[in-house]
Image (cartoon, rainbow over the protein chains, first blue to last red):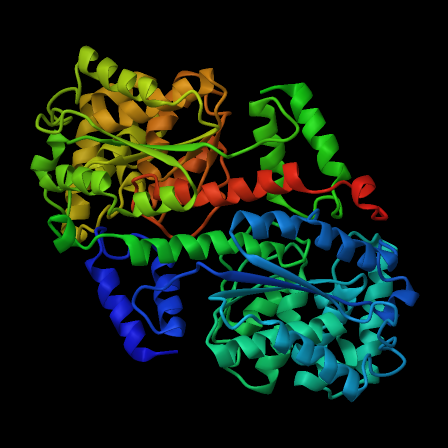
Length: 316
Length: 316
């Protein structure tokens, strides 16, 4: 980030017609946006939402309440404008792109071998890298992939340890037996790829949509585009960048904390405080897209409010 | 609310292309909106923000960090479009109205007598009542009034008891000495009007902008327009309606919880769970206006998403 812009945004903030600090986290958020955008008047006029879809070999083990065909069906729903993320993107004026990643060929079952070979991983990562519109000023990465809470739990467990059960939740809604299966699958996958961290954990235990999200988030960093992280799966993918290089997610904020129990734990490891606490657990980028409204509010105040001098208001 | 519409909205929600419950509080919010609007496809296309301004005789006792002239200066700032609430209203497409309530004649110092006489109270209440646009589909009531956290603290203490200090915070930013003054003023006011509850507490300890907010909230109920409550002062005004008639705030949701320490306490007494937790403490309706984005997101998903049947998605 641009330290001169941070200082200038902070100075402007102090002159706006409100008591110091009265806009709470909106003030920090606006100054943070200013730092990445290099201005004391940040903007969120051209948000982009990119949704990546992938299929997972590990679904053969019965880890999801929904059949794997739903991934492709939901891609059609995204393209037809019928999903939650379409409504939220439209509401906040975001460009929305959907990338289906080789859905007919699921990744390998990670309990048997790496989910992706190196070429396949790189291809998915670069699909994400290339998906970012350099003209956007705020990025949300979302995902769809039946089975991907299991993949994300395995990635998180590989990166941060703890018990496998700490990272496993009900996803789209498995029952207690399904939860037990997921936990055993996560444990088996992490044991199979013991010692994998960073992007290697993402390759061995992740999925194409997770690799693509990591690619998009890394690209946004090179473009200094702020990113709003979504839920557990998005955050697990992002955490692999953090695992490679602490600070790699400094341009990312946590849009929300989901109802998937591993998510607050993951955010804690990353030192990210979520903006919203609304119990969402849908994915698609939906929680992050909802947070676009908060970011827009923050920058609208920072950039649009009058100063005490402009308004002729006594500043206490 | 319309129980048939609630049932219809719930049934529609269950058919939308997402796992059951995956949109968390957005789902409850959308169904609640449907109940008040009498439809399974609720909307938030015509929000209205009404800001009331009043001056307080109790400022003579040194309860605020800002001089009382700031109330009138900020009204000019609202009219010129320079305040935080202007930016947030514009962002979310809300009509915004400002009503300055007899600023040249502050209310009486409530430690000496009732803040308003009965005619004055009724006039302020009816200003709020008449300010609601019957064509709006969502209402935010905001306020500006130097000294009004002291007034709100006195109202809250009168309604819900506890220690005076439980309800007193730093407002726009008083120091420790100022906090002590505020606490003594609140205690003296409540002692002076011992036994006043409901609208009588509002008349004796409130201010014109608090009375007007209560009037607008009551009017919205007769029009079945859902209301988003703002911070401590708005909620204290609303609580007087609740004190008259439990259930009087069933058409209201808590937009946010502010950094003013009495606010979470007040929301607890009203049984309201805030949508946002962002540390705002500005008033003007700003926290509630920010929550318009969340409500818009909730109804956009409920009313715009495809059903499983429409999208050809397998529903698990």
